[in-house]
Image (cartoon, rainbow over all chains, first blue to last red):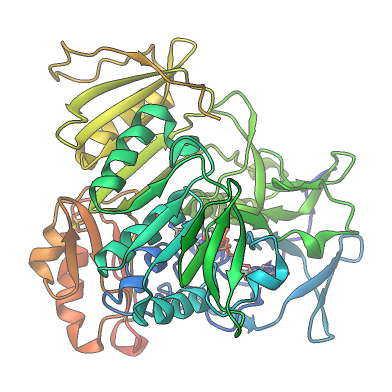
Length: 428
Length: 75
Ligand SMILES: Cc1cc2nc3c(=O)[nH]c(=O)nc-3n(C[C@H](O)[C@H](O)[C@H](O)COP(=O)(O)OP(=O)(O)OC[C@H]3O[C@@H](n4cnc5c(N)ncnc54)[C@H](O)[C@@H]3O)c2cc1C
Ligand code: SF4
């Protein structure tokens, strides 16, 4: 299929968050003057999520994290309205307020939501929390302000660890229950994850590894008072946070005939969505946490990235392609990157450690809790991590982008001591 | 005002902290925390922080757009 020939006059963006707003900004940046309608099922204008688990929970600065909007954005926001269905042939979206809207181009940017605690009745307890949105953060912040005797966090991903860190900053006792052998291991690999295990324990978190919570024990008011582990052990806790990862908001696309899976909506290299039979839908695009996209840098491997930087960059490419003709389409080529702040450390990663089986500290040391580490797969450098060494990470970014031989020699740094070590398991 | 920092870009140069110490701070050695919604009265400081950042990681807008028609820190 070719690109639509008519220039768009109405661009509809479903999902009014980071990717949606970034796309709207980018449309104006490239000179698009037509209508932009942003549809978002949350009641508030686009806001930033990373501060929720780093600042808002500990009451630092403001609970308001609305994203800056340029004064000349001139977009129509329909907030508190969800998209319920999509008809790509009629170019029509069905909305929760009973209305419909037609588009010349559509951007799907409906992101993810927190994976709920699987037992619905337990999840509904007033002291069981998840964290994805602003309302969640304010709700949990109120719970933490009530000085629970022990907070139990279930899940050893970034959000679980960041919440644990906030709890320690607030002087709260906290247990972090992690199913695997190490926290953060999927994102960071075994060496950095083992380093983080030690940091987390040093900062006073009761970190329980290879621990699965089976159920909660409620009191007469059905508030949780304890969790029962699979091995029968009991952990008393009067505040429970399920930090079990995210689910993609694809339900509204059921019936639209698109290639949708738990990893999101499949797009081509130009951010255009694909049908179930892998045909390009030339006027529908997707970006951000919802997109499942082929990475040119990683040999067209399909990626589902849940990071801030990807949402911004992919939205910008999608926006440009929405107003470009077929000849003007640009490919999306982005090196995944993210940061996390926890336990007073600044952790940053570039590249994709997935599949890496080697790791080398190339600067600083684990002992000093300041280092740069690089990941190798099949003799190539595929990712780099920095802990409190952000200034030096850009030098390794280039090595990662070019997949230089592992371990990379960067600049004139004294790297005489590099000793690559195997990762316990290829990072999955 | 509304402020956001691209922390992928931030390299903890701390220039923003010198420019607007009440609105930017380090948590530990280099984790930047910042005021996401500073009062309009802090505009001059925030603008200084935006300009001071060597990697242009800070974006800020005024809630009173007439006073500041262009977004500060165009990335
Ligand atoms: C607590 C927290 C901390 C984070 N920290 C970091 C970090 O330190 N570093 C990092 O790189 N990334 C971090 N992230 C990830 C980052 O915030 C996300 O990658 C980013 O928000 C993705 O943006 P998005 O616009 O694609 O999706 P989302 O932000 O998920 O936005 C999707 C929007 O669409 C709405 N929506 C869903 N379905 C519909 C529908 N049918 N109709 C209308 N609207 C709908 C949703 O309600 C939501 O508002 C963090 C995320 C969270 C939750
Ligand atoms: S001046 Fe810029 S790079 Fe430095 S700490 Fe502030 S935001 Fe980060």
